[in-house]
Image (cartoon, rainbow over all chains, first blue to last red; front, side):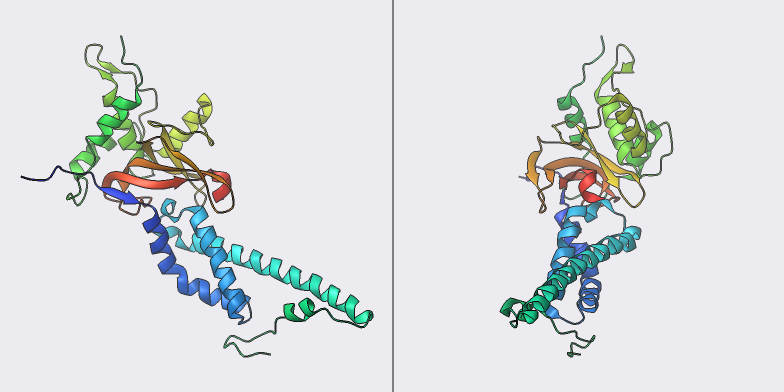
Length: 123
Length: 167
């Protein structure tokens, strides 16, 4: 006997996976540039971009809107980087204050991330 | 006497038009019928035309020769959005079975697609704590990924997030 017909089904999580697959290289490349080669910082930015992608629900965009989606994710990554750098700046101030008093906090030392070029070499 | 508005009628009529698992696409002659129902051409695919078609015929009283479906017969999701806003029934924070959902497209600054909620949505939050609804919609002009446009009529699981969280 033939099985009872079932309705066609879909899930927008597929759209997330598909869009992410299309953008992953772009996100990784951009993250490395913004993070000046720091892989850990770049990973964090890619994660943030993925959260943003999930939030905006890529299923609502048409394929022609990919550059718009890319722009939204780029902005999120830039925001994250700015936040990160603001954090660094405040640490720098802390470090300067510590130097004046003759000590540099361990945390401040660790927070100073070396700048790297696109190949990941420290500058 | 006209037929009172009923989510059950709307959903039953929409379910009758869903493609079955084996169907590749919604037949074009059916899409043409949806679009003919609309009084405008619209420029947001045929999801709104499907809602209009299903709404109209599910609430059609053959004796009276008219339908009690209150929404405009349109192929344009933005027309539905404007109408809902004018009537004060455009809701961001509530949703129920049989409601028509509209998806806002920030890129185009207009509603890009719509569908019918087939189940009571489950209230949830997205990663940043924004309110959202996890739901199953009856979607025309879509595909297995719930894309903005596609060749099928199907049941799509999606997370509806208020526009404020997606802008």
